[in-house]
Length: 311
Image (cartoon, rainbow, N blue to C red; front, side, top):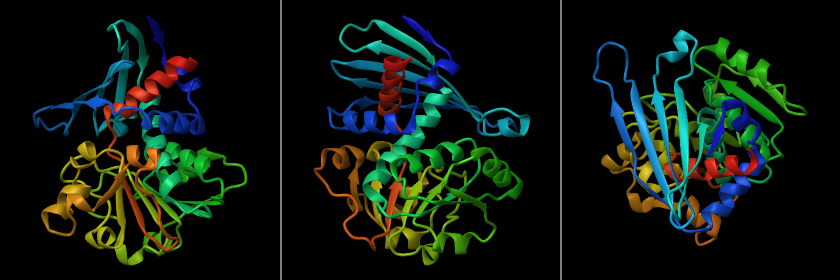
């Protein structure tokens, strides 16, 4: 059994490479998943929790990610999420590897979004707006650039502008203009791709500001009381998901379904269907496409196998 530390896992990961691994894996059999989330009782420390995320690609591999979620950690100078992954042989149950899961989580989340963008964002997209400047933001930016090299300008908005400035300074992107912006509605209207990674309980993106042809990548909402776009955005857009089972756990879909803005039948396709070509992605240049990145243990499993192959 291999022990793969954080540096080794990081060295094995490349955005474009992982996107293609995920694309190929989605063309195979659907993995079985089953998540468990254990939340700490409210003791004044915030909604801390432990996520156990198993997945089984039958006849090939199975594994589980154990991740702690401590939302107040950034105030302590620590990451919100810490994780480890255990990978097994799917034919005999033999342990194959134990690996650090932090970089795995960043890359699988970013490449999940980028894989969707390869089907949903216009090929001539030029402007990417990143809403939120947390730990996921640099990975989402780089992953989108990997699948849409036409992107030549990155705009960054964050509630605390100093964090947006820090992110912009850290990117050091070649041939890509990076700008910190304060007028979010204007930036939304100027965007071809918008990636949103916040912990907002309400829609930070207003549908009235979204230009025709925009692709929206929604990452941050992971509970029923979180969402990142308003009802008007949902009305105007065509909704896609990575997996219905995980996306339907978030306020991004629960809330507009509860109020009759959309139904589950309005979900146009998931990533398995997009990658297999059984359902179309973007149909016309002027369409507004919406991708809800709900994650899922199948994506962690794909990424863990990818790391093992390259570490």
